[in-house]
Image 1: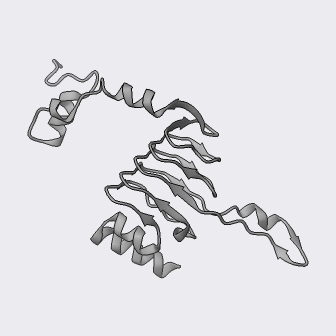
Image 2: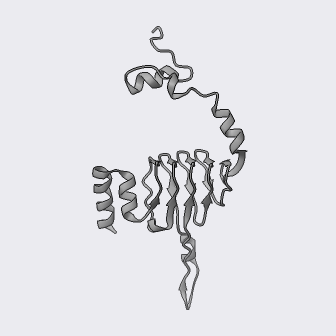
Length: 174
């Protein structure tokens, strides 16, 4: 396993995070932004659709270690289960996704949530445990009021962000 983690770090630094995770066995679709290291002891049990954003600090747990507490003549018990993430999904910072969960298409998982059960297509969830709070049409309609890429002004990334940041005044008096 050390070799795999060392190889992962090298590939991540030279070829990018998505390439490195694919090399470990994570199935990742096209157009994804992945800001977390999806590293688990069973990376081949994770699949991610197209146009998915996985924010920083997201944890995927593909096993339940509590089975080790049960012992009899057949030995300890194990539970492994895949995690599936659909397409057009946003997973917020610090989310934990537990074994056997499927997050459907067009879903949003709020920051800090713990996803203990599958999320149907078009559902926005948040909380511990994650619960539905909106549906996709309601969420999508609210985004129309946000500033668009065309509204950004400036040469640098900072200038473009500052030009649309809420409550931020460029060149405000000291």
